[in-house]
Amino acid sequence: MNMTLNFFPELTEELTQKMGFLSGFYEFKYRKEGFEHLLEARQAEGHNSSYLQLSDEKNEWVPDEHELIIERKLFIKNPAFLFGVNGIACNDAELGMALIWTSKTSNQRGAIEIGAFVKNSNEEISFKLSHTFPPGHLKGNISFQTVLFLKTPGSAEENETHLANLSGMILGTIDEFIVILEGNGSVFPIVEVKEPSQPLWWVVCDWTDPQADSFDEENVRICLNKSHSNYKLLNLENGIYESPLLMDIIASALHIIILKVKDSEYWDETVNGKNFEAGSISQAVYYFISTFNWDPGSPESLAQSIRKDFDSRIQ
Image 1 (cartoon, rainbow, N blue to C red):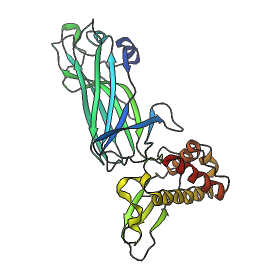
Image 2 (tube, one colour):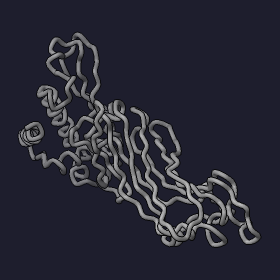
Image 3 (tube, helix red, strand yellow):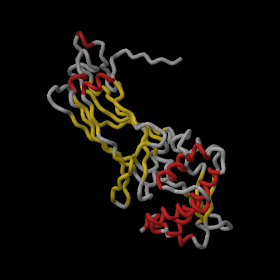
Image 4 (cartoon, one colour):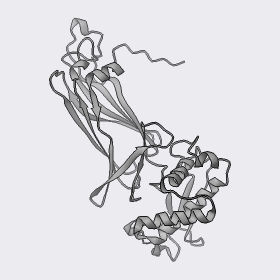
């Protein structure tokens, strides 16, 4: 059994309420050709409101190619409650607010300082988080923890010796969100290959369990053959919506993928949005069907509804 012993007071739910913490929603953006584009962050299917699924209505955002910009406004209405004998820091100490992010898939972790403050009983404190992650820096599910930490130690009075007083000590988590970068279809796994003897494209379905295996190029992908004489007809330079041929390839690939899941023992739970992991193939299939009203009743109706949906996006 693992136990954590805290030798100093930390932020509690009661103290969080007393200090009057308020926050806006996270905003996620990406930059393409000098312009910023907003990503939609919605509650992930099958999870509580602390799980956010990112999607791009333009279907142009690729985490490995574009920056990810995060922004958020935060407020503390009554910071004085955090200081002194009944708080978490000495009266003359300086506290900091930071965002700790963890990306297990890319094996990276970091901290972003949002702001710092001292005791003030009369003024509300406001912060703005703004940070840009380089392309390919984050993958899979990312944990974003907003924490308070001791930035500058104070001069502890006799009744404050029990308080943390070492610079950098984390004194509690205010909130935490899990952000899902992949798995909802906003990033479709497409790879380019050079195989002269092969067709222009094909789809690879290499998963074992669609409810657990992630919707990424390791388990499912469209292969576009750069060695094929018709590759130039894809017209990839101007984005997906300027390439009717690529749109039809993706539609055909999704048709194959969904039918493969439908032909498995996992279909009933998949189509009903049950028992799949965030970012999995089953979650992607459920997202496509439930969000875009694709009809999986028969191969014909599925093919027609996918293409009807795609056509509506480019008109």
